[in-house]
View 1 (tube, protein in one colour):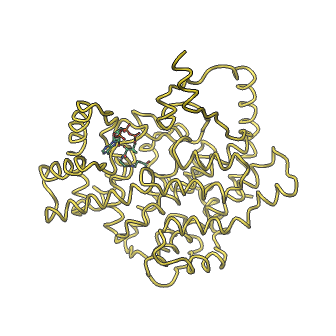
View 2 (view 1 turned 60 degrees about the vertical axis):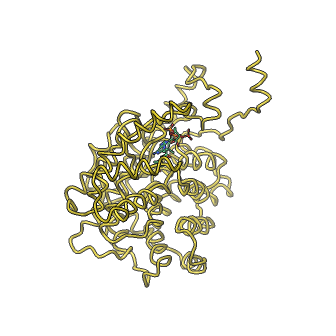
View 3 (view 1 turned 60 degrees about the horizontal axis):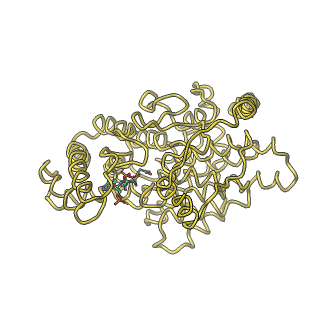
Length: 434
Ligand code: HAX
C-alpha cells in the first residue's frame, strides 16, 4: 500500500471534520460580493470555491500548501504531487515509494497506441493527448465502484486509484504523442526504476548525455503543477468532476481548456514571438529593436505572449525559476539571451502602451510582468525540443497533478455539484433601474 494512501487515510477524516465545523459555525458568513462587471468579466476576483492545494497571491505568485515556489525548487514531481495532496514534503523514503508506485502503473494499453497512430497526422498534439486520456476512461476504477454502489465517503479512494494510474501513464503517452506526431521513429519504452520526470525526458528521445534535460523536465513538471482552483483548466476539471464524472473525463475536460491560446497554449506562441524577433533582426536583438517590435505587435492589435496575467501582479516566480535554470545551464544560448532581454524591455513597453490605451478610453493592462510561459520555451528549444505546438502537452502532464489532487480533495470532503446562478440582460436592466 503506497505511503500516500496511508497518509490520506489519516488526513481525510481531519479535512471532513474541519469542513463540517466551518460549515456548522460559519456557513452563513459572506465570502465576496459580485459586481455586474465581474459577471461579464469572467468572474475575476469572485471568491466562490475552495482550494487547499495551492494559492496564487497577486504579489507573490504560486504558493503550494504554504510553500512559496522558489523555496521548494528542488522538489521532484513525485514530491510535488505528494505535497499538493498532503501538505507534507516527501522524504527520500516516500519519494522512492511514489517512484515505485508510478513504475508499477506505467504500462500504457495497446489500444491507446492504436488510436494515436490512427489519428490524422496534422492533429494538434493536445487533441491527441486528450483523446488518449478519454479512450482510457473504460478502465476507471471510480466508475466501477460507483456502478457497484460505493458510498460517498469512499469516493476519494477510487479517485486516487484512477489518478495514480493516469499520472503514471501520462509521461509515456505524452512522449508517444511527440514521437508519433512529429515522425520521430519508434516509441521509447518506460525505464523501470527511473523517476517520472527523467522517464518522460528519456521517452521523448532528446539526447541528454549530461542529464540536464532530465533536470529541466523535473523542474518543468514541478513548476506547472497547479495554480489554485479558479483557472480555466482547474475550474473546468472541478466542474466536470463535481457531476461525479470520473477522473479520465474530468482531466480531459480540464486539459481541453488548457489548449486555449489565452491559457496553456500561450507557451507555444511565446517562443514564436521571440524567434520572430531574432529572425527579423538577424540575431539576438538589441533592446531598441525589441522595443520597436513589441510596439509593432501591440499596434497590430495583438498581445505580447507570455506577459500579463489574470491574477498575478508581479514577475511570475516560475519565470524567475526558469531564468535561474537558464543562467546556470545555457547562459550563452541566443534564444535564452533574447528572452532575458525581452524581460528588461517589454514591461516598460506594456506600461507605455497601457497608458495609451487608457487615453483612448480602453482598459489598462493590469500586469506588465512575465508569466510562466515567457521563458520556458527557450529552455526546451535549447535542448532540441523545437516543436512549439507540443509545449502545451508538457504543461498538461504537469497540470494533471494539480487537477487530480484537487479532484481527490473535493471527493474526500464531499464538495457539492457546481451550479452557479446565471442571470439575463433583462434581469440586469431591472436591477439597474431599481
Ligand atoms: N499584451 C497586450 N495586451 C494585453 C496583454 C499583453 N500581454 N495582457 C493584457 N492585455 C490587454 C488585454 O487583452 C485586455 O485588453 P481588452 O480589454 O482590449 O480585451 C486588457 O489588457 C486588460 O487585460 P488584463 O486585465 O490585464 O488581463 P486579463 O485578465 O483580461 O487577461 C491574460 C490575462 C493572461 C489572458 C492576458 O494578459 C494575455 O492575453 N496575455 C498574453 C497571453 C498569455 O501570456 N497567456 C498565458 C497566461 C498564463 C497562463 O494562464 N498560462 O496557462
